[in-house]
Length: 217
Image 1 (cartoon, rainbow, N blue to C red):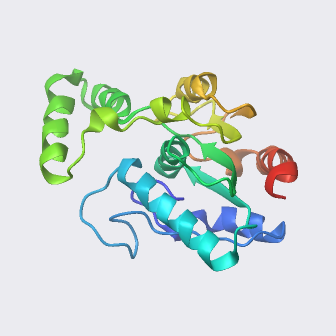
Image 2 (cartoon, rainbow, N blue to C red; image 1 turned 90 degrees about the vertical axis):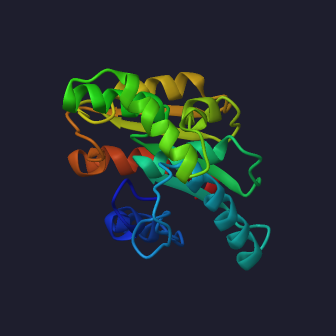
């Protein structure tokens, strides 16, 4: 799953690596991105519901013995973490979360302060009202952090130490909160936002496929 304002084209580098390891790849465009419909971006919260439908589709098409990995980057990673907190089929063997944010309100507040020097109130609160009216959901519920507290799916959290958009501390928060009996945290030194795979590809992909080897490999 791709990030904000991107499309499936932007995660082809991930798909190619998975394909080289013998996986089949499904890389959907999330809501209001690429070829998908919609005019309101859900920042992972609405997308989590779509991921559950994609999972059901894969199980229906390939059978109950299919093994599924959810791998997302940025907003796509948040969507994967959010989906993992739902009642998720056992065929989902693992989640790989690359630079997810903890929750939408905190992420927006951080960006408003960094870019404009403005406090959380009233900007984020106004955005909350607008999204409730237009999008039908409350951003205070859009929390990957609260969702991973309910997740029992093995999860690998990845983040760049030099991420200037979503701080690496959020990955540590997600890692600590995750209920899954097996979890791992990789912080890639010097990597910016969504650039861990490009900064140290050997470390990144070796860690990913080592984590997945006995689960869906």
